[in-house]
Image (cartoon, rainbow, N blue to C red; front, side, top):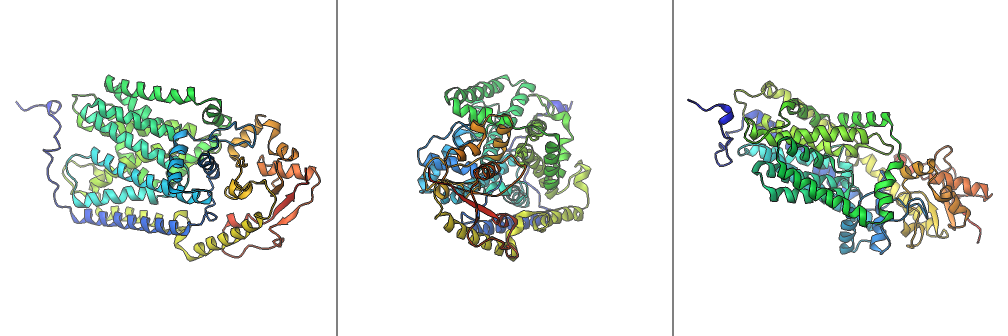
Length: 554
C-alpha cells in the first residue's frame, strides 16, 4: 500500500533534483532583472559621487537630529538629555544605533561634516548586508538547487529591493537606523527559519540575540519577533517560543531599568506626545502600495494561502512551514505598522517590516517564473512569458521615469547642475555664518549643527520638529520653547524665516525677536530680492528670504 501524502517525509537537500535547463522565457526574465539591478547600481554610484559634499546632504526626514547625538558621543557629551529642558534635544532612537555608528566614525576619524558623509556609507553597508541576508532567506525557503538564471535573478531582485526601490533607497543613504534595523531583523528571521527547519534551540538563541540588536537600533522593530514567537506557539514549539520570550524580554527590560530617566524620557515617553491621525495611516498605506506595487503584486499570491500560516511538526505540509512564518510575519507586522504608521511624523519607513516580508514572498514567486513550468504549477505561473516580460519592463520604467521616482534624479544633467548650484550657494552661506556671533540659532538640519552654529561647543540647538510640536501642544517645554531661550540671552544671533501659524522653533524664534523690537538684516548680505537661478531645487530656494538678528550685548 502506497504511503499517504501525510506520511511522506519532505525531501532532503541531498535528494533535491538538479535544476533542469532554464527555458528561454526564464533567461529573458533573468536578463531583465539583471538590467534593473545594473541600473540600480549605476544610480547608487552617481548619488554617492554627487553627495560627497556635506552641504549637499540636506538630509530631510529628521536626519539632522540623528547626526547631532553622534557628534555628542564623539566629543564625550551625554547621549540622552532631558528633551523638554535646555535646548530641547530629543534623541529618538535606541542606544546601540548611536554607539555603533559613533564607534565606527571615531575609528575613521570622522568629525563635524564628515559624520554626515561617512555615516551614509555605514548605512549603505548595512543595506548591502541586508540584501545578502534576504537572498539567504529566500534561498532557505526554496527547495533544491537554483539554476544559474534563478541565482542571477535572486541577486538582482534583492539588489533592486535594497538599493534601488523608491520606497527604500533614500533611507539606504541616510544617517538613520531604519535600514540597519531592518537588516538585523532580516538576519534574525533567516536564523529563525533555519531553527524551525532543524528544531535547533542554539540557532534560535542566536536569532533572539539578533532580534535584540535590531530593537537596540530602533525600539519599534519588534513585530517580526512577535510573529515568530506566535508561530512557535501556534505550532507547539514550546522550547523555541520560551527561548525567544525569555531572552528578548529580559534584554529589553534591562536597559530601560538601568538607562536612567533621560534615556526613558527620550526612547519610551518622548514618542507618545505625537498624535494619531487616520488620514496619515491611510496615506502611508496607499503610498507603500503605490511605490512598491511590483513586489506587493506578486506577494499577494502566496499570501492568499492563509490556511498554511500554522504548520505543526509531523503534519502533511511540514516542508512549507518556513513560508508560513513569513506569511504570518507579513500579516502581523502590517496590522501593527498600519496602526503605528498613523502617528504624526510617520512615513514609509514605518512599514519596512511588512514591506520586506512582502518582497521575500514576491521573490520566491518570481524565481518560480524563471524556472521551467511543470504540471501542477499555479495558473499564474503558466501565463504567457511575454506578459511577465512586460511586467518586468514596468519595473525598469518605474526606476527610470523621473516624474514619478525621485531616485533617478541624479541621472539628469539639470538635477546635477541644480545640486552643484545649491552646494555653491550653501558654501557662500557658510562663509557668512562664520562671521556671525555665536552661539547662533538657525533651525536648519545641517547649518544648525554645532560645528556651524556654536563653534563646536555644546550644547547646540538641533530640534526634532515632530516632538517639539507635540510637546509644546501639551505644555511640556520648559519656558514654552525656544522663545524663552532667546529672551534669556542664550543666543548671540538668530537666523530665522517668518512662518506664521506654525508650531516650529523658527516661528517661536521669530516671535521672540520681533517682540524685543530687534531690527533684522537680510541674510546673507546682498541677497535681498535675489531670485534663485533656474534649476536650483526647491530646498535650496528656501534658503532665500532669511533674516539675521544680532542680539544686544548682555
